[in-house]
Image (cartoon, rainbow over all chains, first blue to last red):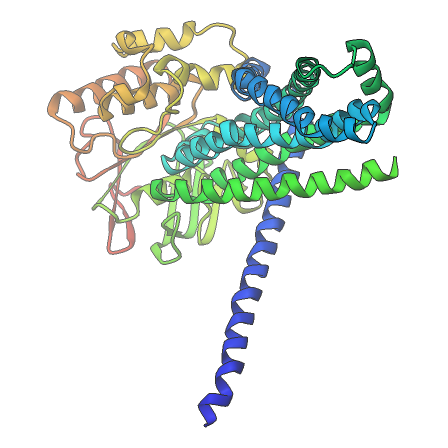
Length: 275
Length: 228
């Protein structure tokens, strides 16, 4: 009888133990990530111009890898996004006689929300994960210690170019995706015989856009790139790794990057509401 | 010879990089400029950890490491980085070359990073001197571990080096391989004086080149030849 009454208490306690353990671990990771981000910021500010002959080509290579090489994929997704949004909304808007809101819908959905978030997730899938794997492998092979023995700051050589590269890449790719989605949206509307001239369509978009939108877009996409790079570099570099641990930390980095990007998106939503 | 020790270990305890159990206790050692030390000991005795501690790459578990008279435990990061610019460290086995850079780029990296070298001419000259010009544009993974370690030596010597730390490069080498290292370092030191600390599984691994010997036995460092 005594065991029957104690069991729920023990279960509840063990559940609490596990939950609190996870919360504490998450907080510890968050703290370490914050410290890593501050170190990276410090190195970027103090050593930005140091060893330009080595660092600048690395930044360009990261922009190329994370940005230019993703252009076809981003164009494809942008095309699909424009078609999907116009395809889903145009019928509804026509039925209620609100065709003049097509541009506003495109700005709200593509420019402010889906464009930046989808691009960030594409960059994470294409470059963020490869960064975690590459740095995790370098760490496991002892290359980070080799850099230190050469007097080369690993954060300066390995992290800073990735952070700048990914921030620039996410911003540029988002701009590209938005443009492709806007144009493909109009093309789909034209193909469906919607009486909407290009001038009227882009006029609606222009009316719906504000200066703050461009500022917030630049800030948001830059932050997405920084978060993806910092989280993936942190997981690749922060602790001594064995080769077999690289896949596990990569998965963890992807999950945390997605959470980070969604949280930033939510913060910017508040920003959009108040501007 | 300058009378002040270049590196001084005072009651130092050394652990494995990832562990807490001391491998070596109460190590007292003075490294003077121009010396060539051989540190012999069995596999896993703590040679590599001691070497890393002397080089300032690893913090001691206890005791004091003084580099050029400066207590290393409270040295700020920029000072540590500046010291690392003056040392060369050749790691065991594959030499830890950067896998995404070619052999030439690996050697040129410290020169370009620290001295803003515009060309790779100095790195090419080093490769030529070591008889490795043919592999200049290959990735390290294409080379045998022995060649990778030779490239690692060239990378360590690319910048002006005050102390060279060699982590067991002669381990498992054939006679010709040992001869290459002995000849290369003898010629190099004749032109450019450099202090050397090399580890070896065999006490006479560096015969003819080393002038000081130390061994590790049972977690203790024994300095031989009456040194220190």
